Amino acid sequence: MLQKVNMIMEGLVDAKPYSLDWDEILQNYDTKGMGDVCEFASNYAFGWHAKNGKLDNDASKQAMYLDIIEGIVARRDDVS
Image 1 (cartoon, rainbow, N blue to C red):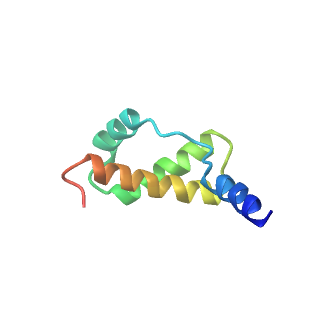
Image 2: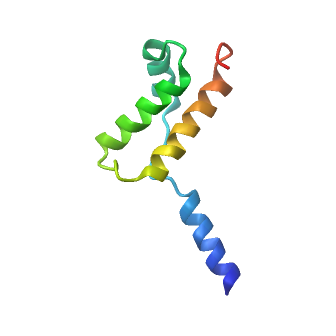
Image 3: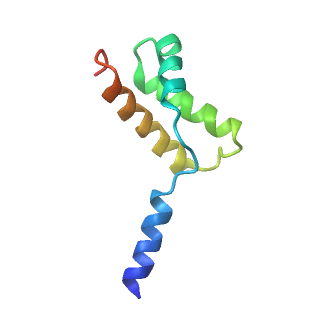
């Protein structure tokens, strides 16, 4: 029973209320990011959550922030 509960909880934690459109994100980063990936990720995550009425979901904002940083670093050679 405990294993089932843990699996359910892990599923809830891993579930994200957003999906990332990498074409849009990279286009925005290339035109607005000016190389500061952390600031861009923070602004994008905040803006998405504000636009979608989810500003109170801090865990989701943090997850998106980290996903965006990781994704941009993996997709762009000039970012460290």
